[in-house]
Length: 288
Image (cartoon, rainbow, N blue to C red; front, top):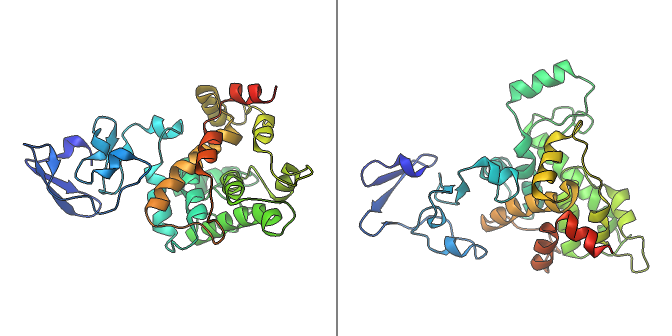
């Protein structure tokens, strides 16, 4: 729902066919939003306001979250992908322990095109390793990447396989480490062997600063979108930036009732935010 969609004193929430009474004299709705707000976003604590009290920059079609009105904010990792989050909610029905998988689906949905377009691409390039469907899965990962259930299973497999060195005791991982691994594995950046290599030290613990610093710059000829994002944000696309995309969507899904897997009781969210906001220049300075 955009601010211009008002008629008189009523706001129609299109997706849920709800109506909220808007009291123009006080600039507020008469009913609160139906979902509890996020403690991470102070503006959302006022459930009677519209879109974080910032209708110029945000829209709210459901009463559940304020979505950026400008897709550039999503593209640059400055805000959650509300469309992707809705896709994740639609297909990842079980919220118990599935927050990482749902966040992976939400992130991958950024690259989702119409099924017709993606099928035509595959027909023209049958041997391509391109991804399709809500998980952007390749045909090497599943026989039918367009099937939502197959896509969810692909995402589960990506994350579970990458976490095997942690869950199997090969390396020492905290819950914080495992969220970072999931954030990169959902985009096929990390697999089990790469995760094992992260902890090639006496303590057998991942070294994330060194890993992020070691990521190469995307090739604009083969990965123009990644290269543009890295150039415009100043962040490593396959490191801090991908973690940022993942956390943006993960926070929203946790607030919507999705939960982390068992054993993720203690998470250092402050450290995750620190890593997700590191620029390439800062990584270089830390490496000196």
